[in-house]
Amino acid sequence: MSVWFEQRLQDCGPALAMQGPWGDCTYADLARLQAAIRIDLQALALDGPAVFALVGEHEPAAVAWLFALAEAGHSVTPLAGNLAEHPGKLGEIGAQWIVTSAGFGWTLLPRMSEPSAHAAFGQLRTQGHAGLVLFSSGTSGRPKAMVQDLTVLLSTYQDRRRNRLPVLALLGFDHIGGLNTLLGALATGSTLVVPADRSAAVVAAAIAHYRVAVLPASPTFLNLLLVSGEHHAHDLGSLRVITYGTEPMPPGLLPRLRAAFPRVRFIQTFGTSETGIIRTESPDADSTFIRFVDPSTEWKVVDDELWLRSLTQVGGYLDARDGAGKFTSDGWFRTGDKVELGPEGTLRILGRLGEVINVGGEKLMPAEVESVILNLPLVLDCRVRGEANALVGQAVVADIVAAPAADHEQLRAAIRNACRRALAAHKVPTRVRFVAAVSGERLKKIR
Amino acid sequence: MNMPTFTRDDAVKLVLARLARFGQELGQPALAMADEQTRLFGEASPLDSIGLVTLMSDLEGDIHKACGVWVTIADEKAMSRLTSPFRRVGLLADHIVEIVTATRA
Image (cartoon, rainbow over all chains, first blue to last red; front, side, top):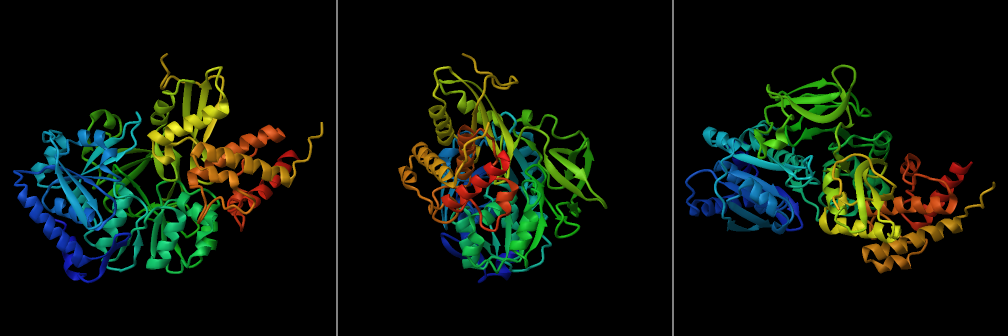
């Protein structure tokens, strides 16, 4: 069970495992936290694997819990933010226990719930493996929960060579990319640097302060870093590698980044919640084409869509409707990503085939925004879509059919404020247009 | 028909008026006190990235009302400038005048 983690805790004892707003945490500190958590888990006297929700960010207690639960063969659902944001998700996963972490501390709460009878959990129990549940944006606007084999996922980090290059955590603890950053950092015995927030100013200050060498980021973040000028305001000379993924690299940005960071190597990454992160290489530094070089993953392109089959792919969706048509009977995952084939086995990600809107690497479905807007009395109908935007990759646009009496300027502000109250910031429409009619029947308002 | 010239002064007024309205929407009345030197994006700025994109979208509507042309403020040229036009109100006004003039030509 995650042998490499035990080995790292022993080998790297006094070395820094994590640095962030809560202070410094060594590998020995993580080992102590894990020992205390084992005692808490034993005290629960569980008679078999249980489902835990782990509410927190990249922080020592949350990381120690993740590995302690994996070691004990439980299933864990990382949830970012605070507990009050997730009542629906807790119900869907059938969480029996909730851990909320804060820095080095945690609170363990029981939750009245029957053990989940889902087949994906049953299979994990049979194999004696731990599980990982991740949520991603669903086509209906409802996040979809996927169950993954955590034991297998952890094993793919087994053979990483030690490098001790500090890595910055930009993507969240509940995101496959964020987990990959965390596991990659700990598997190589290096330090995970966690910024207090993800703004360009704070991230640039953290890179300078902690001498970060590896920055995994989205093209949008890198664009905003250049636009904000924060790369001039702080000494980012410690950076050696910038990896980018989660959305296509817009034309023109990579040359600008290479000019701004001439000593940095740029590497494109690729992954999905369904298949995990896939190791890639680029034909050359200026190319936005990639080649998959991951022995655990097969790929092919069908009708311009990328299909993947990987060792670390999810065992299933908790709600079977979410999985309908996503996986073929022989295990291929249809990514929904439109790709272009290049020379010598390379490919380039062009965008999404479906409706998912990708704002700076954070995804959303139009329906979740439409359902908020349609509740406003002066809105007769609306349609939400993405449009290309040079600052954030894609921006959210809402086309509104307004009641004749509506003052457009006031209604525009009211629409955005309703979305700000109900939705994450990246889902708030940046452009609100008033139109005579919208096409399609997705969420026709019933009056 | 010749359109009246769109001056830098017009552009500054447009940006400041929109900032003030946007401040009302966000409950940040301080945005009404902005001037040419006010930082729009980056350290100590009032806007996050989504706020900046929103402001640009609204400004594009304002420019259309004022000049009769649709422009894209955050275009590839804006992105590749050595000094980003999104740093300060004055720099943004310079950029707007340039793209409005180029679009009308």
